[in-house]
Image 1: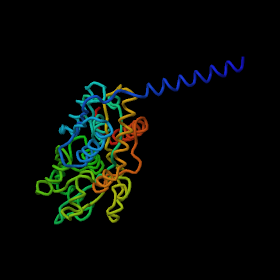
Image 2 (image 1 turned 180 degrees about the vertical axis):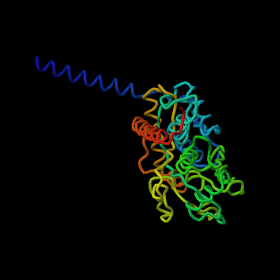
Image 3 (image 1 turned 30 degrees about the vertical axis):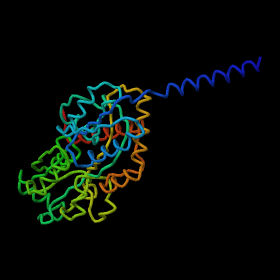
Image 4 (image 1 turned 60 degrees about the vertical axis):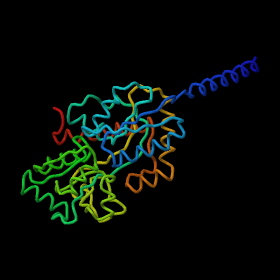
Length: 323
């Protein structure tokens, strides 16, 4: 009797494992995949996504098409994806700011629960840059100018609701300053406005200003991340300067909610392998967006939700956001 039960158990286990294996296989993709980038071409979101797409298509066996959908600080691309079919053929690539910051500050047609989190492909520090001949040599000088000249300090950002824009909104509330924030459809246009003399300061992620910084076309005044950059150890963070402001951008690829788990797992595995290739790592390091351990799937979702809660608490303390 015991032998019969043992044989039955072995057979049952084998069939179960076989069924699980078959279930994990999915006939996907059978047509091209679109990844919508929420910003203008040229900066980190766009360049990183295009390289992930180019590398991934070999493993997926289908074209991965990148289309730029700039507008609303990433809102346009996210709105389109939130309304798309959850079949894995319509994805979006954005910094997580418009997902975890923007909905607290203004009405948007989506919420964090409307997305399936697939893969992280970069982490960016937020910086404050000026032209080489700017009169601001420290962040304190910038602050003093803003205090003595209400609405005269102009700062370009990659869009309303982005990490950079929100960070300076919070800063102006903390200091009681009137600053003119000028939103653009991406980091590249924001930095271009500074280079052209149209604004006094630019605040973007590292991918937006890193090449100009290396070429000494801009100077870095401060960082809004958690720690100093290894390549620029003399540049302080706002946290060090006494402000409770720590902002980072996480580049993420998301899809609509209710995507099939097998599809999410397949995409996550392929994207992870793509960002671990020497080609992608070189680009990511050049753009100062490389992260050693990119998050995937459920772990990524959990961490993004934690970040969302942290910013919600900050905005409540500052009296920011939707009442």
